[in-house]
Image (cartoon, rainbow, N blue to C red):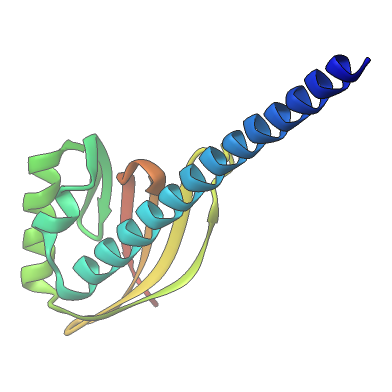
Length: 145
């Protein structure tokens, strides 16, 4: 009887360690995703503030929907970067402020709405991406009334 009790205690301890191990892996994975999202947001928002289209391009998916005051469509990474470069050259950014963010309807993407302040007025920026994967799917920059 004593042997069965010891085996039961060992089995019970192993179960706690396995659960603890799974919990630790889950926590570490969650922290890693939050850190990636933080880095993504900080880098992209700073790039918008300074007008760094090359840095923004590093987060583009292979094709990206881009809407600017004079054009809109789906473009390759290089085409979109060139268009953003031209936009930032004409309308030099001085600041970018995030106004709202959250999960998109599909719950797989996140959305960000911000205000881009330039030498030619203010623009609303709508950005859709997957921060955990550090990818941007869509950027829309429209003139504020």
